[in-house]
Image (cartoon, rainbow, N blue to C red):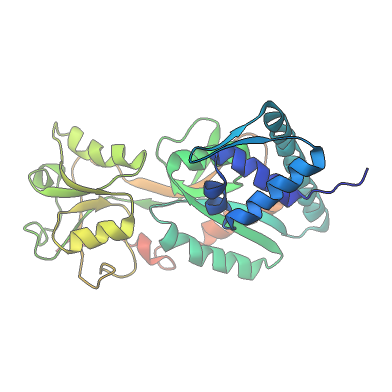
Length: 312
């Protein structure tokens, strides 16, 4: 029997199952919604099965047949990936697909340059990236939609493996006219009376709040955002200070207003930026090549965002 579906269509099917909607799957895969809809329709026509129940404004629900087909599709994709890895290792070449995730907080600062240098070195690799929250990165590594992820060492589960690349101490981010902007360093106690712009991301938020909880304090949260660029803009325009472990190459917000970075001292824990990988079995030649490349490339001299903050 001739197969009339492709591995790409199976990948679309699996991601739609994970996301629960075609729109979210399209965003994750960086393709159009009609492309994914057409792929699903072709698979359903080929098998003569209804894999999803479409509910207006409520996304998709898998049928029993859909769950069974998606489960087997994961097996097929995993085996196809192993075939690519095997042929690459036999040939001794770094090639094939690489699916890398990155924490939303620093994806726009770290990943593009690292990807560029890696792809220049290994042009036979088909690189795909996605930016996610910490918990979504964990899920992607577990379900096989990600080969590895760049993230912080925040709440790393025991079934995943973390390899550190850099240590990043926390710092307060302020506008130049903030009352504390001229300090050589500040503590959570110093910051607590002032309005805070909280970078409100899953897992990360507990880390930021923890500085204050360690002193028996609560931050005075005036604004919340999940976007690093928006946080910088609010801070630069005087809506409060924030806390971050990473800084762009430019000490200015997107609107051109200046920012000041002051080291946070006291009972604080730095974050480690690193690579997160599935636990257990070894990784493919292509994944290992990225790990080795990142270890050799990510440094304060090559990656400006890793430079330590200097207080006023």
